[in-house]
Amino acid sequence: MKALILFIGWCILFVLCWPIALLALVLTPLVWLLSLPLRLLGIGFEALFALLRALLFLPARVLGYAGRG
Image (tube, rainbow, N blue to C red):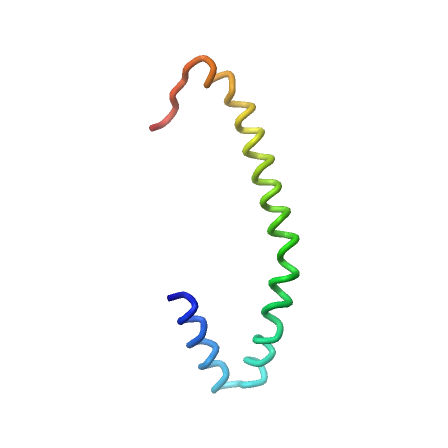
């Protein structure tokens, strides 16, 4: 559904101003390629914070605290 809405929006942009629509069509893969390192960095930081959280809550888990749920 998201892809269909995106396609319809691009078609409307193409009718209203075709140079900007073609520029968006060309630049979208480049922006995606430039954002890949930032996504990988975000995944790395998320893993680091998960490790720190696990280490901080380890004594409580060893002592038998069940937590929420």
